[in-house]
Length: 284
View 1 (cartoon, rainbow, N blue to C red):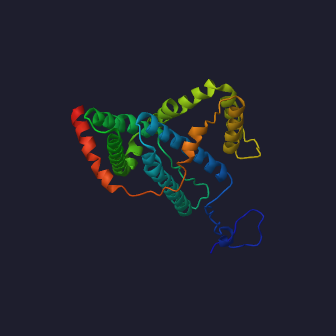
View 2 (cartoon, rainbow, N blue to C red; view 1 turned 90 degrees about the vertical axis):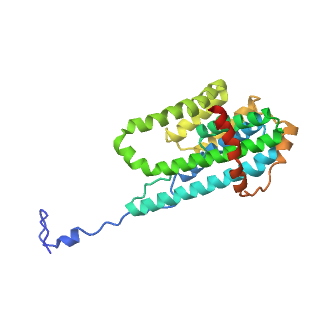
View 3 (cartoon, helix red, strand yellow; view 1 turned 120 degrees about the vertical axis):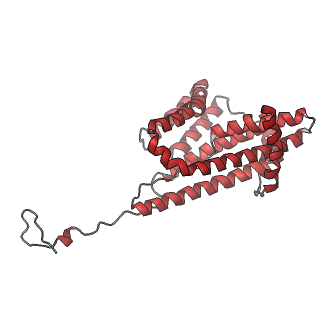
């Protein structure tokens, strides 16, 4: 064992005393800021769920039983399972690396994929089925099954492509990988909401100011930034007449509220192939 050679040290203390192991930080399941992030993630997914309802009702013409009894319960389960799985992965990574700043990737609904499935898969299948004389409700079921199969196919492609991530990251520059994501985020996601903000400036700009103060200005607010932005938006929308409460519509929507447990639909998933094959043949 060597001795200490620090300037001014006369004890001749062993080196082992100076190289004592520093305790590695351990990740925690809940830290400051997680509440605000959780509320922001919940608000984002709530907007996506409202978009699903609007597209399924207005574009695809799905009945409420299919939307609220089958589609939305499965969506809720996927969001819960996905976020828990990502949180476990981040916690394990933090323990393995001895770091306490690892953050779980937020799991949610992909807006671009949602539009792609609706307008490029499900809507063409429904229009083709109706054109062949099928009942609209049966055509809706057929298009929903086609969407299930298409979603499964894209998931299998992503799972297979995961084994090619390391070589791609090694050979492709990071700018090339991130530019696509940035373009999609700006063009398909951010720009639409930004234009809506300026379409109703009294409400939109006020809410935008709250978000900027909370997340970029580091201002101390009485409530989490996401919650305060929603509350400010509701109050301003009600004060300016943008928030309208239609009695019959409100009652019809409340009638859909209830416990809807997800049910496995493996048979419907397999039946979706009968809808996609004729569509592919027609495209050829």
